[in-house]
Image (tube, rainbow, N blue to C red; front, side, top):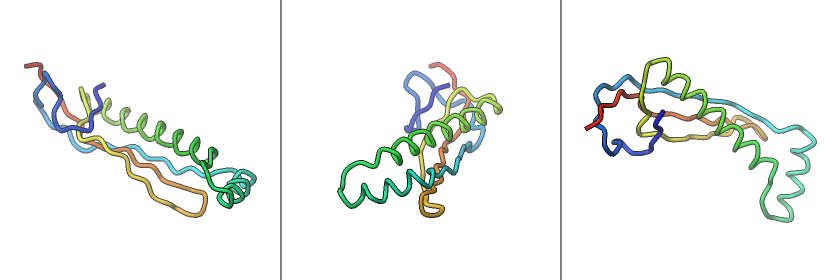
Length: 106
């Protein structure tokens, strides 16, 4: 499966647009880690627990989007993007989305 942020794939043309596909996940940190993160903000620097949580969330959202594209028989997802939003303190939603397409080699 080709995933690209561009609207075109070099060497191919879009034969058919199958529609918008997305995958999302809402994740939160463990309360103990959330408290540790609060102390880390006082000193400054990277909050590794949140970095790890968001990396895992992006991977899950991407995987879910790809599965949706595969169900449609897509060769690629073009115009791929991530979006995030805070649901509540310590919880975030990550959304992966793009346009599922069939490709034809040129």
